[in-house]
Amino acid sequence: MKIGVLGLQGDVAEHVAALETAGATPVVVRRVDELGSVDGLVIPGGESTTIGKLLARFGLLEPLRRRVQSGMPVLGTCAGLILMASDVIGAEDAPHRLGVLDVSVRRNAYGRQVDSFEAAIDVAGIDRPVQVAFIRAPAIERIGDGVEVLAEWEDRPVLVRQKHMLASSFHPEITGETAIHRAFVAVATQNRET
Ligand code: GLN
Image 1: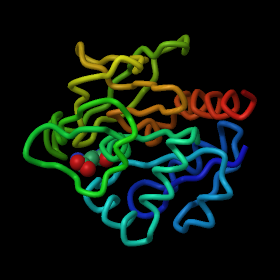
Image 2: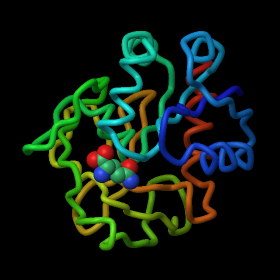
Image 3: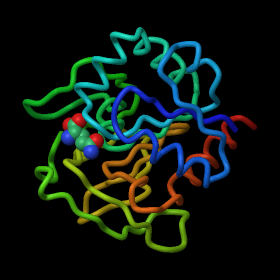
Image 4: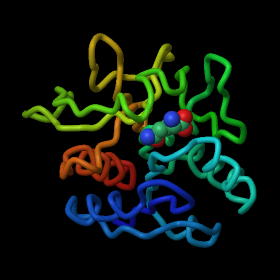
């Protein structure tokens, strides 16, 4: 299973390592032809305004949107969630978003960089708490009808799934965890088989 990691900005290497441990073959994606060769894609955390601008500049925004809309599995974490969301609430919109996931998010809702924290969260389908990190994380403030909540933190959804799309407010890749990557590889495998 070839899983791409969007490599324009953000913590790319950590996702590559986690995917490898989860049994996938990771590929860094920066160009349209590289996008064409993968069975699924991780959109890492970083800065959503920057990643969005680079997606537009490298001509990836439309091709990526089309592939996700036609069923390519995607995992968006933190800034990746913002890029996937259909709406951004508040003054800080990120231009050049994909808008493929039926949720509304608010950027930087968990405070500034210095307010970053780790938490052990319960995730549907995973039989032990998963250690994750919140770094200037977006809050999910609305979820659409077809969106399933897989994890909450302090009564707010922090991991959601809509069909072949998974997205998290948190970073699952910098705490030495691979459970979320394994779950994503399972979604991608299921998607290929159906
Ligand atoms: N605060 C960033 C944004 O709004 C996201 C932070 C992250 O990805 N860790 O894009």
